[in-house]
Image (cartoon, rainbow, N blue to C red; front, side, top):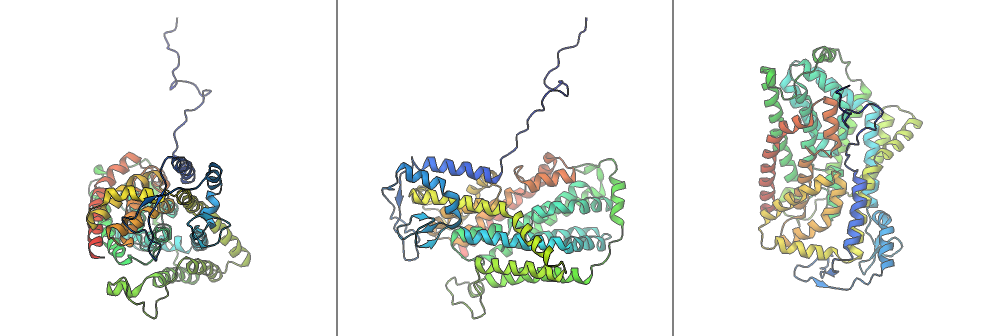
Length: 510
């Protein structure tokens, strides 16, 4: 008689169905659920409004209850048309948003096209191979100066992150950076830190990142360049701290490999030998493409910065004659033209240029739709007249707080939202319509509120398991997520404290 026990679920044979692993829903799915939840809550939250000033901003202390005047069919129609209104809904003189009304544009059509345009440009640059080759060439030339190499790669990624939201694109560089770090005596955790933290701290301190600063500034109804001085100083300091954290760990592992948090896999040394191969120099076309990319982003910064306000410290200063004051329509047009220009410089041919522009726009439809769905949520709140009620409720919580405390509260309160909605665009579009008027009530610049919001989104996206950049990076570097969290936790604590200090100072001096 056999003493074997019946197979358990874990002992079952190959014929048993595999266990289903929970996968966090996408940002689009989360926003659909948020839309339904807000629509249902609109039946329970009493409608109310603030009086508005000449600029349309709510006047503190004037909140009062009103009748929404909506029937059940009206509410159902708002739910059905939420994505359409989120794209090109028009707000009439009564404050109602609909696709066939007369008034000002309330939908996110401008941001939608801007995201597609910059997607076309970024895809075109990658299609030329110039950026990949440039970073590979940089890594090869500095391979014998390992500390300088780490600093250089992280700075390149941090610059790309702060101006263009460079994050998911880092996933294509692990095949280069992992063997290179191993060849230099470091471990896989070093390679992961160089890549994910270099770009991540850039996104955290976004100066003109269209997917964070751009969308949030649009939702807050301010210029993309407002607050750029504070964000640039934050970029300098927080990037230096992050690079220092990775360097300190890398040197420790190089001196004593036993202190590695990730360990070494069989074959790491053999794989590392591949990184010593000779990398051909950049040819003229690649240099021209990289120069064009740098010039485009530099011109974007020049075009959006309110130079008179930035240089004088007076938000109401008269603009200088050379200021362009560009906004999303002009920027979208610029990136479309720049995408074609890069294709022409790279001699890609008419057919390939057209295909790449279309493919680039298509690749960025998902984040663009996130903006549209999130704006659709605000339309439901607007038409139900509950936006001001929510604002009034939060006003009571922050009333009496100092400007510095308010800025820190905006940062802290948005941390859990950033966990649930890892899409910076969707998070910004949902949160800023409430945060921006609150900043007015607290006497804090809306630009500081935008900076506080994006810092919360950025710091969460350095570690949350809902981020494809983090989980994909861990998988490609073959580092356990639990080990990565252990590596990054001390840095997160230091960044948290520094962000709070910067926000308090920014609120006090702007």
